[in-house]
Image (cartoon, rainbow, N blue to C red; front, side, top):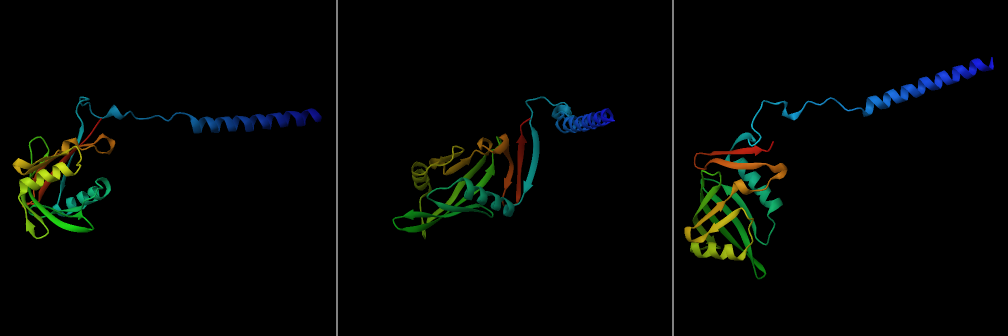
Length: 191
């Protein structure tokens, strides 16, 4: 009789152990994965491209959020896209703030960058000579490496194609016509 209980115990223990091993195997075995390169064959140097069309209002929201999160500095400013690009802000002078307004005409360059041509510049209620102020701003403040100020031409080039975005994304400006509200970009995702 004693032998029968011993056999039943070891049989039950073996079944439980086998069940635990089977469950562990099922949990930790590799899952069959569909390879990412199962998509249609495209040369590796080509990136996936997404075309994005937006409005002045939506781009204003995105640009101001980017300015708020990424471009912290001593100058407080915000962007407004109307028929021109308007950069509003305030400069710290002694213990007070002086308001400024810069307006630019914007156009997309063939290489995907954005050209801002200065239309007007005022500090407080005073209109200032654009070239001198752009030179002063370029010399006095540190801008991201993808912003180039050309004071003699009264231009600022925003090298959109050189902006480092998360995940290795690249951006190219296709069109930037504020008067017609025709704004589009291509976003490239590396493979």
